[in-house]
Length: 324
Image (cartoon, rainbow, N blue to C red; front, side, top):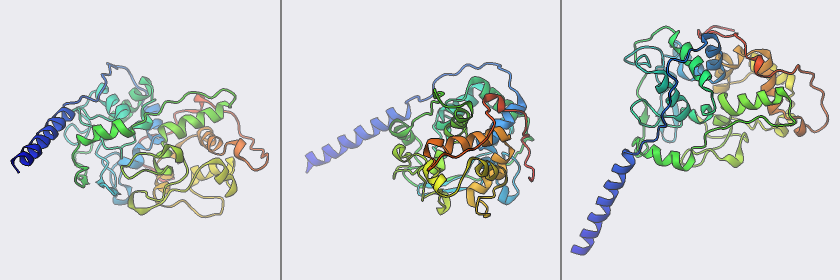
């Protein structure tokens, strides 16, 4: 009996040592952007493209832009997107540009702790230093909101934030985007948006029991979104089969109206209202071109859309929430 007690004690001691080591494990890589200047208007456009406003603004409750979003109810608990206005107490007003870059691209807070993957930082990993500086400039330009967002309510043991370091080691796959030779500028721009900042896979890809994305099911749909909603498949073959074309998808991303005359609901309605409706026509067409990959079409379909690359990103969107 005494030997068993000693064994249990030794096992417990080893566990505490392991936890202590993990807790001290630094996961942030240093960033030195210094005083790099940003373009407010381009940053505002990126904020729309990347869903920052849709996520961090509780429009259902009449919340101010970026002052905190609606709760995301998941099997792990309820996550509340925080206030990211320039308030120094409840927002990001005391952050530096370098800290912002680490949070955005690496998912690590200024205090060195990891963010939960409800924040889709993996999809922002390929943003350039200039992209980050532009976003930073845009966020500094919005009105300060002093109130704190509600606290997240995360279940045990997922509320033990040190465990996120193990999750990251097992499932974190930062997006890296490279142009594909043989594809048009339009298609490659769509790849950049869909795979990166627009983070379509975050909703339209299934997850395992620990919340890791199932890479083999990329864009194949997700029946277990926060709040019990679902996201349909958005792979080319499925989209063509349901009557989507480049033209009507680009139109839907602007208006929320689908080919059958119905409208998007749930989180996709918010994505359109606060995000894609503010994009320029070239970028909406690029997203549709990438998703509706011509090689997935059942027959040759002519979709005469003008080519557009990075030059398509123009100053078309402010940070304020406006009705469309």
